[in-house]
Image (cartoon, rainbow, N blue to C red; front, side):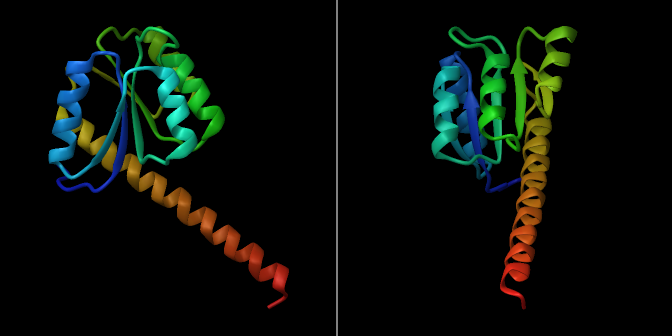
Length: 146
């Protein structure tokens, strides 16, 4: 298990007690955690901040997890998102994966498995950022004629 992961996570779930407990458990492990209880708020939050991982409940009032996933991916195609639900089905799992979810976990969540997935998502995000930076340096190099 990864302790002191030092990552930034957004938790989106309409069950406030569950949300508070999960946030506390992740913060104890060294993560910075933001929480929202509505999909609309999650979509707005990704406009202002970058997260290593978004953990998104599938079943919420207002816009559900699948619609929230679509909207976040439209704004940030490289966002790492795990769908979390207490009512998973094969159909919803397949739909979430088609829309770009990285993984699908059922409640109650296994903290070791979640921490492993957070670590993997952070590593993947770092690789994407490194590749993007390398391309920008290469572009600059060519534009200056060095």
